[in-house]
Image 1 (tube, rainbow, N blue to C red):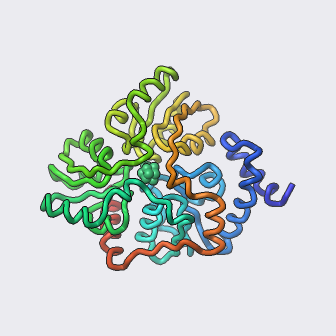
Image 2: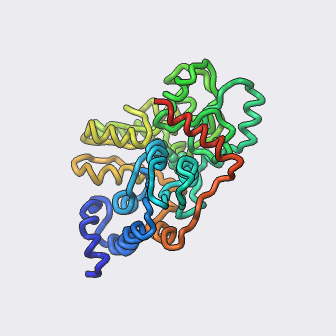
Image 3: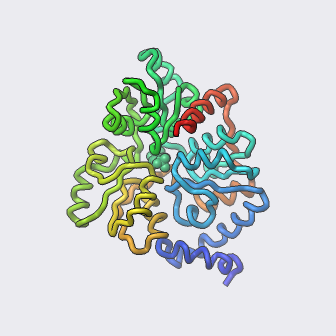
Length: 325
Ligand code: 13P
Ligand code: SF4
C-alpha cells in the first residue's frame, strides 16, 4: 500500500458509504497532497454543501451554505482561502476578508442566476421603480451587489425582506426565490426572470410520483425551486437548513429536492436514513475537483480580485445583510 493510501485509510472510513473502494485510490494521492499543501501555504478550504463527498469530507476545513461560508470567510486568519464552490462565493469571501489571498480552483465555475443579470439591469430597475429597495441574492456578481441596498441568501431571505419594513421590494435575480418569499411575507415583490438551472428542473408532478413510490418519505426542497414544487414539500430552506432538518429530525426516508451531492454528504453521517435520489447536478459546482484544488494550492491560482471601484459598495450590501439577526 502506498504512503498516500495508508494515511488516507482513516479518511476513507468517513466516506465509504458513498465512495466505492475502487474509486478511492484515484482520490487518495490528491487528498494527501492537499493536506500537506494547506500546511505549507497556511491555507484553508471552504466548501459548499454541493461539493462532492471527497472534497466535502476529506479536505474541507469549513463546509456549509452560502450564508455560513460568508460568515466564516470573514473570520479566517489563514493566509489563503481556497473556495471550493462557485465564483460568486469566492468573490463574497474576498469582499469580506480582503486581506487574504482567495483562490478559486476553476474560474469558470459560474452560476445561471449570477449570469442572468448585470449592474446596468439593476440601475434600469431602480429608474423604473424609484425609491423601492433592492434586495439582491448573493448568487450575483460583485458589480450587481454594488448596485443593491442589501443582500440575502436562501437562509435569510424572508428575514431580510421583513427587516426592511416596507410594503414593496425589488428582489433579484431569482424569480422563484422571490415568489416563495412573497408568499411567506405578504410583501409585494418585483422579480427578475433569473432561474437556477438545477432547481428549475424539478416539477410538482415528479414529487407526487416520488411520494407514491416511496411511502412515508419526507420531502425537503430548496427555495430556488418553483413555488408549486415548494408547495409540495414538507419543508423548504437553504442547504444548511435542510441538512439541520435531517440531523435533528432523522426521518427514516428523505427526499432532498436540490443538488445531488447534498444527499451523499448528509448520508455519510446518517447510515440509518434512506435517501431517495432524483439526481440533478450543478455543472458549475462540479467543475471543482480534488485535482484542481491541488493545482490551485501548488501554483497559487486562480486568485480572485475585485475592482476597487465596486468593492466597497458591494461589501456594504453584504455587511448590511450580515448585520440583520
Ligand atoms: P445555499 O445558500 O442554500 O447553500 O444555496 C446556494 C446555492 O447555490 C443553491 O443552489
Ligand atoms: Fe447557481 Fe443553481 Fe448551481 Fe446553485 S445550483 S450554483 S444556484 S446554478
